[in-house]
Amino acid sequence: MTRPHGSSKRPQDKPLGALPLGRVAGVQVNLDWSLIIIFLLITTSLAVGLLPYWHPDWGPAVTWGTAVAAAVLFLVSVLLHELSHAVVGRRLGMRIERITLFVFGGMAHMEEEPATWHTELKMAIAGPITSLLLGFGFLFLGGLLAGPVEISREDPAAAMEKLGALPTLMLWLGPVNIVLGLFNLVPGFPLDGGRVLRAALWGATGDLRQATRLAAGAGRLLAWLLIASGFAMILGVHVPPFGSGPLAGLWIAIIGWFLNNAAIYGYRQLVLKEALEDVPVKRLMHADYESVGPHDTVAELVEDRILRHSQRIFPVLAEGRLQGLVGLEDARAVAREEWQATAVRDIMTPLAELHAQAPDDSASEALSLLAEHGINQLPVLEDKRLVGLVTREDILKWLALNQPRDIEAQGRALFGGRGGAGEEPRGR
Image (cartoon, rainbow, N blue to C red; front, side, top):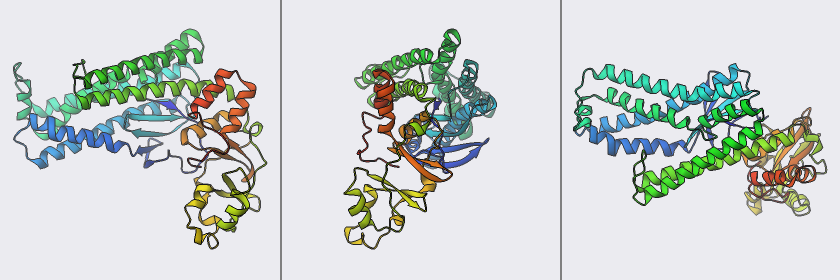
């Protein structure tokens, strides 16, 4: 599954809360901490459920070792799925610098929307094809390793009991990857099948926004079907092909909830991107900000800045050059008796860890960064000198004055109804 995000000038380009794994095929791979959930879920369900049922004679070491290997190889399969999107996209001229694996799968972070519906189609279909090829490949290897096995119609699981750990692992990974590939082909945005649908609608209508709206609608319909199925399963209803049970039902409902939010977000982001695409950041930024020096004390920051101005975040400047940002939460982290002895440079977020924009950058990029990273403002730099700050409220004001009410509403919804200049920051 892919989803576009705005570009970042941050040198250490990874989502907050993600662990950088390294570069594969020129693409930065990040692991979100939520992967622990899916890793533990797969390992535990196999080690205490399926594997003991298939192999009652296995000891704990073999059972848990196979379960851990299955969880790791499943995550590798998801990584290959996402890498296929990134590799195909880059060959077609897309800027895809990183992918992130998280509890619901993965994302290839695109710097912009595909230029044509052909590009969208080729990128979207690459992931499911990769998963299907992996699935059939694992089944083929499992069959080779297992050799001739008689499968009884009355008790097909009995055949698994005769297999070793490696063929068992292959024969589990095969169907799982096939299901992953087929699920992603379901025509609901932002699943890969939804992007295939959007590409087809885009090619038929020539209107990307209309195609996105229809594909997102299909995605929301799928999401609500999953949510309804999940609650039915919790109540004991058998829902093909998911089965029944509270735990499985809760998981299906959560997946539906995530897909619904992702479909809404995808359409909302496109609408706002179109509205702000040709608007440079310098038209929205404000230059009437208060700043502090790196050698100022926390006491001076609090008494002379925080208590006297409506700003909550202050640029830290040395000879006109931005050193970092500091704010109310940074000051609160210092014990009051240490305010006089603590310098601002010791508590600020340094420039190397900040996202920044240039005056001529598109406001749509700023919007994407603010939304993606949950931050309230971005410094605007020209030749490493601070020329202004652009905030959520700056963008929302421009939308209110220059766009219809429904587009302004999309902007406020993207920020969760927040965005005031005096709002408590959730990061830089």
